[in-house]
Image (cartoon, rainbow, N blue to C red):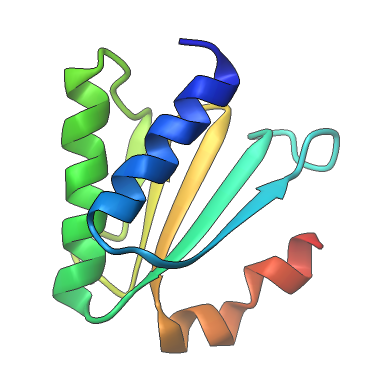
Length: 105
């Protein structure tokens, strides 16, 4: 799968689990760790964890396991590192507090 197909696959999996308010940020040349950040919201800690866990399972089944997963224990903010794409699944309060969209805009 090429990069745009992988990104669409990830977006589809976030959408499958009802991830809300998806934002796609191109950080090529501005970040040394990734090219794309995808940020979405979940309704609760359980929902945030479920969205991230489903993405991890689907990526593994597609032969592209994540490099790392952070925050799954708390569920307020789960980061799934897919290399060229980093996915942030956050509760609304956490997302409002950190404002990653403004930071990288």
